[in-house]
Length: 630
Image 1: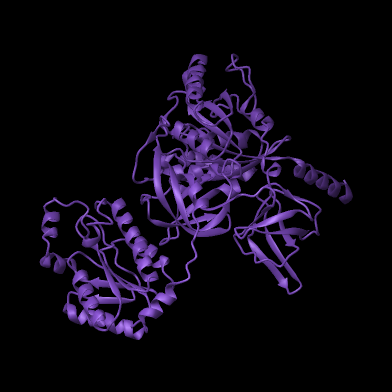
Image 2: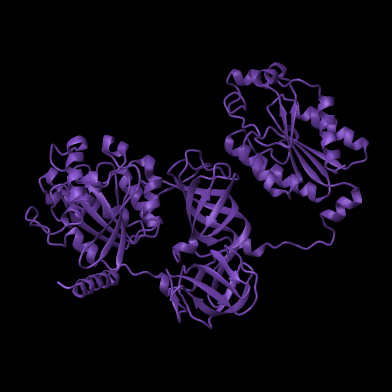
């Protein structure tokens, strides 16, 4: 064969592969339902394994296998050492395979409840879900949980694969009973397309092709369903959406805006709006490495240029002018929590939607969802792997769509401000109406004018420390000293505030978070009035103190750690609280059965266990003088 013929054959093959569409799907279900074995069977029977992989599989089967000396196909996917030793899936494993009709990317997701967050990660990019059910065990809690998450993630096509039919003698009645039970449950979910197929991943029955073991089943095999199911993407037919990922400015004669089209299509000459600024303009060019395009559609990475010189930044959304997304700083969403530490309403997080990252907090947890019954249940916090319907408030307005209309512009993640870990994911349902009806009222007299009239710089002095450390004592002495200097001050004391503003709050973690949120907002208003505001609260959690700091302009928040050892505070015990806490009469008491997180970088540390309160107050005065506040 000549080199020209070989080159031609390779070119034809590559062209044929490029023309195939691609289906992304996940396998999910409960523990030991056979998800990894099924994917291994698909790879093995579709001839997608090389000789060295088969050789390694044989060796691994002898060492880790659970099939009595036969090849253990699950080991093709379970690559982690812990997975092989325990015979379970922990992480999401992605595999590619191809047939003559279609290309596939499959995500093998874990079945254990504690790894539900990993399953949600795999589902977030899938078009279809293969939900496995062990024919011996039937529909389990995790089956329902995964089905609900599949529905929540917007997957509309489900293949119910009733596996291990060989273990129940290929009993048709057992298959029918499982399918009936599942359809009764799934009828409450938004899953319009459900196909049921009985299989044995271990034996290969009805996986690649129909077998003789179940003559009573006359439907297609699993692979045939995967090859023929029509998954139509609505993104290209929706309104144009383009989140800006990068401002492309290679030289002074070119300014473009780069990103991936998240919805619809665009052509030069189209009228677009820049959000959230609401400025309108016209697209002039669609630039790519291979030259300009006459049209670009959802999924393509391009650079757009526009007619007017407009301030457009990373995170802004370029959208169709006649079909705009919502712009708001509050919305309702379903949230799946993915962290060991619970979600607490009022606690600050970072929200990332596409390339935009912004401060956010859950303002109200409307209800949690029981994944077994789908009933709504009350709750004040959200634990690992729980789902809730929540209201969220953002630091600034952003552009978004409901998740049901566009996954790219309607899905977000929540990030812990301290650890930078992803702690939750969410799907936006709708903007809150009050977000559109509440506006800032312009006032002629601003903070600078109020501060100038008082002859001082406003600030918030945030005293934090254990109960009994001396916060209130030092705060009182400090205010007397500042008052003698003619300064305008106010002290927000933890006990005093609970007689009025926060009288409805207890001492659970949830109520403590809300306690600090309210006080921080109040302190911000007082600083806006031009006052030197002294806040004296235990405020045990770093995240809430960080939230208070973020409310203030740079330099106006001064964290003062009143540092006294626990034994010193307990020996003082001016209110008898430690004694009651030790006796079990006060639950959630900081330092006893609730943690105190010391400041990592406070502006001032007062050694309250070694110095008298007057000396400590003077140290604060010295800091204020040094900073030019008084």
